Structures are given as C-alpha cells and as structure tokens.
Length: 291
Length: 83
Image (cartoon, rainbow over all chains, first blue to last red; front, side, top):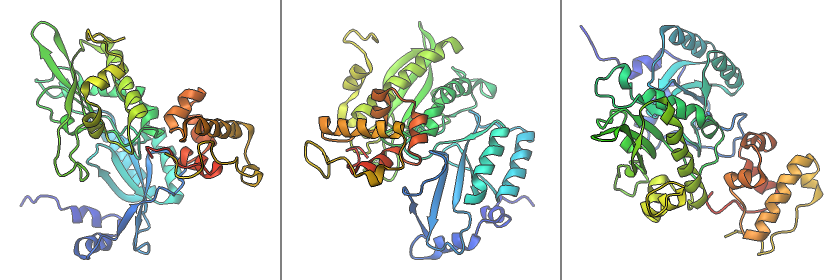
C-alpha cells in the first residue's frame, strides 16, 4: 500500500534529535532560541547557529545553507556525493528549505571542512543574514511550454553577478529574490522582495517585469502584501539582455541600501518612499529614460 | 542619531584596545571616526566600502564576523541608525 512519506520517519533515520522536535510541539514554549548575532562564525554568510535551550539534546547547532543551481536540479551524481558528505560530516539529513537553499545540519568542528568539500563539488554556501538570499527560479523552458524567458539562465546570471551580495552581508535587511518565467509565477516571485516575472507584449516582444516589496511574513503588519511593479517592462530576448536586468537590480539595491530606515524591508521601504521617488533615485528622469 | 557621544564624537579609544591592530585596520577606524564627527552617526558597511573604495571581502577579512559591529566595539561608537 502506498503511503505518503512521514517527516518523522526521515528525521528519525538521521542524527537529528527527534526528542527536541517533540518538545517543540508539546512543550509550552519552543526549545529553540533566536539566532545569536554575537557568535562570530568563520564565514560571513551561509553558516548559522540555531541556539537551543536544551544543548544536551542539540549537538547539531550549526547549519549550512547551500546555494543550489537555479531551477533546483540535482543530478544523481551530485545527490550521491551530497548524501555521502551529509552522512560523514553532518547529521545525515538534507533539508530542501522553503527559501530555496539546501540546509545541512552539522557541528562547529565539521562545518568548515564540509564547506571545503562542497566547494570541491562546485557548490558554495550563502544566503543568511542581511544579504541577498538565494536566487530561486522556476524550471522555465526546460520543463514548461508557457515560459516567456529562460528563468533559470537569468537567475544563474544574477546569482553569479551578485554572489558577493549573497555571501558578504551589507544590505539593510534580508532581500529574497526570485525569477519567474511567466505570469503563472510558479516560483511565487510576487511574494518576494526583489523579483522578475516573464511577460510578453504585442509589439515589444518578450521581457520581464521588475516587481519589489512582497512581504508575507510575521512582521508584515497583519496584512500580507504582494510585490508591486517597479519597472513594467525590460526587454529580454536573450542572454545579451541579462546585463541590463542586472544593472537594474544593482541600482535598486544601492538606492535601498542608501535610503533605508531602521532594518527596513523592501516592502516597507516602497511604502515609505513610493515608486516614483525610488525610480528617480535609481536614475530615471521625467521622460522615463534611465540616465 | 547616535546613542552616545556628542556631535564632535567620542574621544578615540585608548591604545589598549587598538594595540593589536594593523595599519589597514587603523585606517578604517580613522575613517569611521571622521565620518562620525562629520555626520553624527556611523556609516553602514555599504557606505564604508563605497567611500573608502575598499573591497567588501577585505573589510570582512579585517574585521571578521560583523565588521560594523566589530568596528563600533573597537571605537566605542554606536551602531549605524539602520542597524
């Protein structure tokens, strides 16, 4: 008889302390504390430490966030290599996290060696703290007949161009990006801080819409808000147009970094300044041209 | 606005706190102190990198972990307003 896989079944086959999970469910308060900003970790981003009140049960307090290939594919060879790595140096558990990264739980002693082995596999870590998080993308034309732009290719270009932004935090707050190949938005780009959505216009052809400021989290003021359009259309016919899209991201991140308030997410920043002011700061003149 | 120090900024920290620093680290601290005196608050990391013309990775190498927090600890200056 087929049965839907059970998360406890997976977790209990690893070194993850299942008792702590049970305590989190049944206890009056979570055994997990906040992330400790005072902990000086050897990497600026990509490595975090989740503190637990029950340190006796939680030896796997360090986690790594692996930046996956855009689109989320993993070959059987890579899957096998990761499985071996996670078993040898981690808790024997790989978490395909909601944010798009692959999380590995490990110990402080193993963490750096694990990153070294990830590097040897062509992977790296990032996407923690106040930085540009992992650039997620839908499968695009590799799997979809609706795709208007090659979302994984564009996301790969952006992830490589902004790799430092993902690994060396210097933004006012976290910024979650995404690239959707078309308006169906399977990757939920409209939930994200900085995103592109593939569009097609009758006379102008294919391109992307730049949307910013999606905010659905606990601090969204009780009113989840989708991202709003900042630039309605940027032509993207092929790889030669990716640079212009990247320039827009760069200008936006610079303006947000320069003018953001106290730990202000992109959505709140957009509410406060308004679209027109942000576009002017990005270099748009009154005629709609970009300086 | 800053949480401590007047418009002219706090006095430079004593040599005890700075004794282990190299000239490159001292240059960054001097810049941040000057910025504070001029603007009344400390710069954020992006401003520091842009205005000093430094590579962000270099700043992380000089002040591991959270560079701005580390710089503020060393100088005694408050964290930037947006942090």
